[in-house]
Image 1 (cartoon, helix red, strand yellow):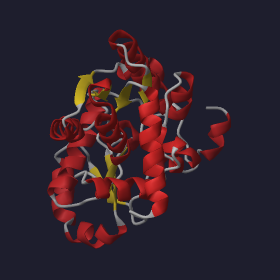
Image 2: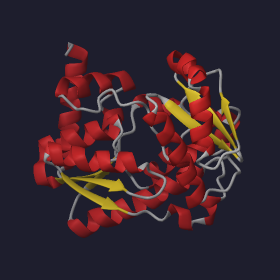
Image 3: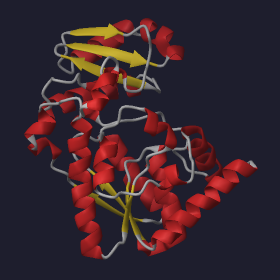
Length: 274
């Protein structure tokens, strides 16, 4: 570990310790995993990692949080948020993430008060601050602390430190909630999210590592890493047949490859009104 990362790690530890006791929003991604792991190591039973097991989280990621928490010996709970009950969320506006995170932070705040935890933490990092993320507004309104931002962590810092600490998901590909696969304005439903998850499970089963299935009605638009585009073309028949079995009529391959937040393209200006 170089000196710069070592200093950030120490600042992260100090910041979490200064919170006294914490609830950590834990999705299974590398960012929130690092916060949960360090909080558990520093605060012991004064740290509680909490995962929302709603339908917008992949079942594989839900099981990952359970396994990681057990392996790390940290306190962990699974709750069910109600974002799908909110018509504003189901309508899928450009600030959909705000309603999702509000539902999450409402419950985490209630849980923290009920069980006597002083602070709520999330896994936001410095690279997130330059992206279109309406959920940051919800975090601000609920006074959620982002210890990775406070300590100056960027995404690569998180992966490097997680690797150093031996976290098994240190190199886990970027993930996001299943609703992020649906173009803004297309209504969200449980059946739709289940369909997307089934299609992405096909990609996982065929050996792809970084991917998204973007839902466009009866068209599944596949984004895979640029280094896996050739593999996708070679497996075109298998991909088509198995993804059509998930309920899609057409299967398309996006030749631009995987891009995190691809459905945000063209909506940058809405930051001013979200």
